[in-house]
Image (cartoon, rainbow, N blue to C red):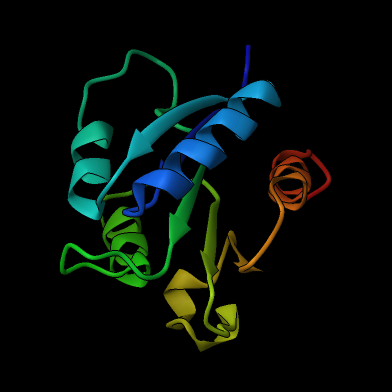
Length: 128
């Protein structure tokens, strides 16, 4: 069974590009053009399986909620899956509140899709 990814990106062209690449790399990708839509996707009832194995979230979303806000909401709602944040702006996971730092990674834009795929593989590998 393919690992399930949640990709949260408000820029449609980048959402499409990353979706194509990650899908070709063998991942099952759920797309969310906003933080609110991502939260809606996660409220769909699931029988005995996690909704996603990894969330990939742009830090700069345009719907009033940042990637950090979404991360906080996910953790508040009990979702403990790994989260990969990315941005064109410098960011350090260590700047997050202590309760949000666990199981979170960061990738600096610009990046080529291959680097994203390698990072996803690293995060999802059992040795992570």
